[in-house]
Amino acid sequence: MSLSLALQKRFENFRLDVDFRIEGKRVGIFGRSGSGKSTLVHLLAGLLEPDGGAIRFGDRILYDYGRRLCLPPDQRRVGVVFQHSHLFPHLSVEGNLLYGFRRIPKIRRRIDPADLCRVLDIAHLLPRSVHHLSGGERQRVALGRTVLADPQLLLMDEPLTGLDEKLKYQIIPYLNQVLTEYDIPLLYVSHSMNEMRLLVEEVLVLDGGRLVDRTTPDNLARQRMKDCPMGYLNFLRLEDPQPRDQLWSYRWGSQRLMLNQEPAAGDNLFTLTARDILLFRRHPESISARNLLRCTVREVFDLGPRVGVELDCGGRQLITQMMPPAVTELDISPGNDLYAAIRADAFRRLY
Amino acid sequence: MFDLTATDYQAVALSVRVALTATLLSLPGGFLAGALLSFGRFRGRALLEGLLNLPLVLPPVVVGYLLLLLLGSNGLLGGLLAKTGLRIVFTWWAAVAASLVVGFPLLVRAVRIGLEEIDPRLLQAARTLGASRRDTLISIVLPLSGRALLAGAGLMFARSLGEFGATIVLAGNIPGLTQTIPLAIFDYINTPGGEGRAMTLCLLSVALSLAALLGNEALLGKWAKRSRS
Image (tube, rainbow over the protein chains, first blue to last red):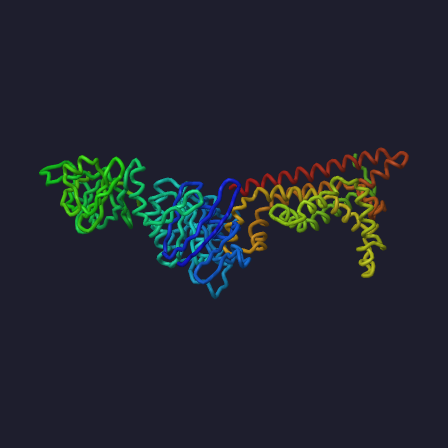
């Protein structure tokens, strides 16, 4: 996508003033509540009129104060998935899904509703009333409804906030698949670092109605790991599960990891906190932790009272943290080889 | 007890017919006016609201007189209608017109209260899905305002049954033609020895209005249950 916007909007005790250009396919807007994220979504979708500025998406002008141009929401082709799905209560699931689809001229319809229902796994819900859906199902239907309207840009405003932890991450593979299959640019608004890391390539950080940073999700996670009690979360996508010694062995890059977690159908994505990784200078002959990985130090970075260490484990990245005296004692510096020990029960399944 | 004469029966039938016609005719306008006042942001909104509510506070006789000036054969609208051979004043349509104007503010008020319960974010969602303002009004607001329209229609119907002041000025009190229940009661009261008949019609009037209100409540309750399930 190519989205450039310069917008000002003043409220009684808040002022949004942003000016940026986005080129990536998947971009996140990150910030605390009250930072202006939702206002930005409403301005982009045309649900709120700015006080001044311009919005240009590709070669289309959506808003231009100077030219007195402000396209109404129904002509912007900007789809929005809201935090509370806002399904129409008088329509069935099918009626909701086809609401936008029926408003596209027949000749322009390019997404097959049956196909999308299969991707989102909602075909069995079609005749149901929307009052009989779980939170996760509601959001999948809302996503389907928006995608079927064939937007040129998909805005998602905290779509997973409010869902319970387990459901939350189950939606992400669906979303990933939809975005890839139908090639829709995504602007994802959230205050959740994990969602950013799983979904977007670039993050714009808003604070107090202004753009304060733009970076990659991984950099953002590293910057913020010192404020987070859990430290940095490593994401590990594991493959080829096989039962072994009452545990499960998964392939991770060129090596195998032992976990006490059974495999799920489809993807197996696990998290591992930085503090669950122990480092050894030399090979410990025997150890209770079931995983001992040979790795090389790639980078050492400052985390205030602690030190962050980026490791290369057979081509895969792991980030861990430690106290400064340990860094000296283990002689941790880029290029040095180490052993990382991880317990089999330290992994948490994300989806 | 209900010993009714032929003209009494005609009065009852006419009352119901007038109330029903006035209510049905005013529903589309009532919905539009309610929607305009609930969602519209335009200049003169307060003035429009004031004008719509005026019949609620004006003496019905004044409303009747103003309608007479408008619809009479020398009136602005009445003159035009007369050219096409239509006459409203002193026909049952005059009773309909009087009920329509007097009951309309009640309908709009009930519709508005109902419409304001609709989550505006549903309308925003519809707009981002490609629906224009008018489309949103028809595809989202209208289906979701069934209960509001029913409540408004019930109130308007009951109000029309009791309409007197504007009707007597505009439609006259012609037995069998424009005489509704309240007008018939008025006649009986002014006739020596008519008290008994007046009381009979009074009781019938109470029964009819109560039935209309209770029936409306029951329908509303059923509707609420349906939209919850």
